[in-house]
Amino acid sequence: MHTIDLIRKTRDRLPLTEAEIHFLVTGAATESIPLEQLAAWLMAARLNGLALDEIRSLTLAMRDSGVRFDPRPLNQSAVDKHSTGGVGDKTSFLVAPIAAACGLIVPMISGRALGHTGGTLDKLEAIPGFRTALSLSEFEAVLRHAGAAIVSQTPDLVPADRVLYALRDRTGTVESPGLICASILSKKLAAGLDALVLDVKTGSGAFLRDPAEAEFLAALLVSTAEAAGTRAVALLTDMGQPLGYAAGNWIELVEAVELLGNQRNPGSEDLRELSLQLAAWMIHLGGQASSPRHGYALAEATLHNGSALDRFLAMVTAQGGDASVFDRAPSFHRPGATHTLTAAQSGWIAALDTTALGWAVQRLGAGRETAGAPVDPHAGIRFHHRRGDRLQQGDPFATLYATRADLFPEAIDLIQSAIQWSDTPPQPVPLVHSILDRARAQAILASRS
Image (tube, one colour):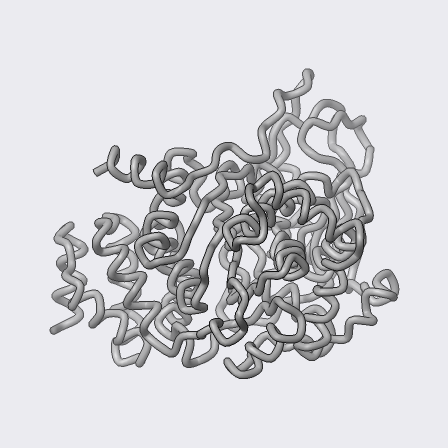
């Protein structure tokens, strides 16, 4: 086979065979296909889309491009959660220890910052000493100890996605349902999951803002996972504003640990509620609860009794992190520069361009523009107000933390342009729009075929 022929086929909207997709994936994993050719194929796939059979073949080929983790020796159901990305999305730090505290294991393989969204691994590496690059034997040891582990892809685990994930970020090909589906599920299925809960974002901060496209992606994910033997459900959730009050790296961890310690902050209520709903489904699909409602009650109990926080701190310690840093969180937070942004006018916050807010966080130093570039663990934004709040001109809207003070002007421009003001309060937006199980997912895909 010749890569250029496969690029032309996808460019001309001709479906690739399973063997042809396997050839591309193997070339990515072994780095035998030049990056410029892989980039050209990704752009063709982004512009023209992939057929359902192509997406399923791509997912499984990427899953099998390296070694796979087998959780069966741990003798517990393996469950996980994945979000399609958002601003301030730190639910992984809550749902993983909650599910572990309920008798499940959570082998979570996560990624780094992509586009305007933050990266779970970048956030965890704000903890001194925390290791995300573990061998499979170390991965298993952490799971035995803490019940949850959040790690990066190893060179041997889904190597094709490691290459394609970074390339998509640099070539403007992130927003493709087929490529997103294959990237997410290849990592999750390689972890040997029994069940997977998917948090598919929609709204101004989602990669797929169109609700119909987000629903299609959710259906793709559920159907593909179920076809591979993993029970799955997807929640379509709102990303019309940052989730919780913090967006960045270290400050997001602090917010998550507050909630794990059963501290309630009005700015974190959406984060708490969504985390409990996601964990409820994980606990139910993992066989520890008779229903999602039962799972919700079990999940909330772990916040009240402290067992979820214990699991999180045990995971941090087992992965080399200094868990005591959370006892001195305020003094540990040392940004290079701080600025308080005030409201430019009076009125109600009617809507927010959350993508613009995500880029503001990235511009402050919390994200990266090129693969492998360092991120500032202390950069980010703490939001003091949310959609639906009424402000007077001059009221503090957000506190900005940056690597350097000269980074503030661009971020401020992005934030101010992201706020839509109104003289009247906006209509509330539901946190969870809908839930897709296998039957509903198949019906959605059938209606679009």
